[in-house]
Image (cartoon, rainbow, N blue to C red; front, side, top):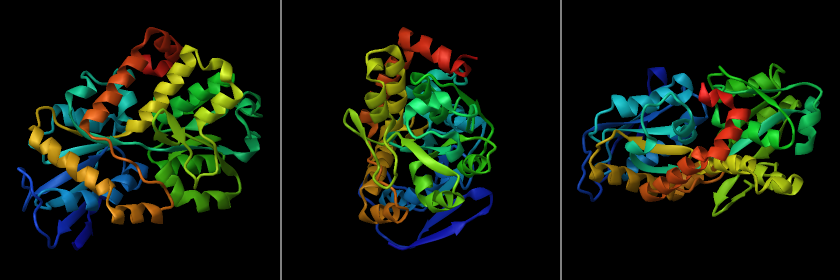
Length: 355
């Protein structure tokens, strides 16, 4: 199938079908335009993720409609989620690829609804790489409590999932992380560290893979750790990223915390990464449309050409989990983050979630 890619203003990408038969389904999008909304600005890591997989989703949607990728940033990614719940039509014509939303929905008070009220087509994990400046003299986690300067973590928001995960990790080793919110895109966060405005940040694995050479050339920043790719109950390191997983570091350097509420909170943040990119539609969307999107995304994620596109970015494939598996993960997240002993630890380390 040939695709005609047309980049338009405001970061919107239209993918126009040129030829190809409609898929076999009760749903037929022939001649229609559907939207994949992503919840951060154009040009960032979420945008890159959406634009990479969008042509392959279009390939497998019944009728191969025109697909538009549309950024809907705001409120550190929260605005798009509220839009899907409060304003999106339940007609199956738009879906939100929402990054970092599971933790936000569970812990932040900016939502007046349960994430599980939305129609859920599935999810994909996201690896996260934490970068730290060389002049912070950190080579192992026990060094975090002895840095020459305070740890300043650049993030999109003080309630950033990735920043909060690292804050919990650092707390295990007696260190405090100061989260500096307000950075619009991953590139802005990376630049803040290379220029010395902050000294720690995180990037999605996909974005880091694209930018790793440029980051290395600065000579001032190195990867310190990664979440890894979920594999059952463990997280495997992404081979292209020269850094251990955070869970491995905790098990090696602080095994005494493994049975504590603090580790339970850390694990909940890690498990959230397994469903960090979640595909949601408006509440009340007919199941046949949810299934059509779910099937198309699953086939896109397994497409050999998509695998080549991902390999060209020197990053790892993200396995797709359908609606049932994603809801199971969300149930576990709600149980984990709402546990009273975990809530007390979260209030201590990340009080921003309770303001």
